[in-house]
Image (cartoon, rainbow, N blue to C red; front, side, top):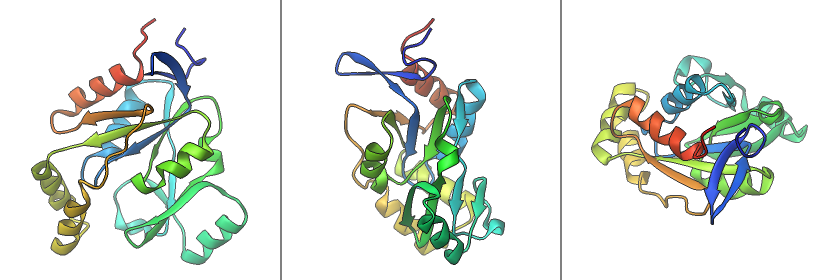
Length: 193
């Protein structure tokens, strides 16, 4: 059996610690959602947390629940989010029920809320995805959600301080998805049974 009673085993400072919530972070265009879906497909103990976003449903992209600003405010006031933040002119929330249970839960997070996530979740780790600027530029252009100026701004933020700490695993997502997933699983599950 894996350490942590079915949770991901991570090596940190010579010991194994169980992680229940994994914050997946990285610059826009790095492929967070694609990698998260592939990891959940590859490992039966991993599930994805569905975010609530103040973005219209028709905007596309990831699977999310759209909510108005007023609805978001009400949910915050009622304590409905385990974690919430603002980024890129939108508000994002992780509903309490999305981080309940015994599975390992992948959550697409902003790098700016890692401190709050570490404080909120007792068993937390970070999967930091990185890619070369030209890879990010091509992916952002291909998804077609942002203007040329917005893409340039996102690329300028791409090298925003990378997360550091014993709970951070950094994986490059420049190559094939299968390679990224294999590297992430090897890092997240270092103990084989």
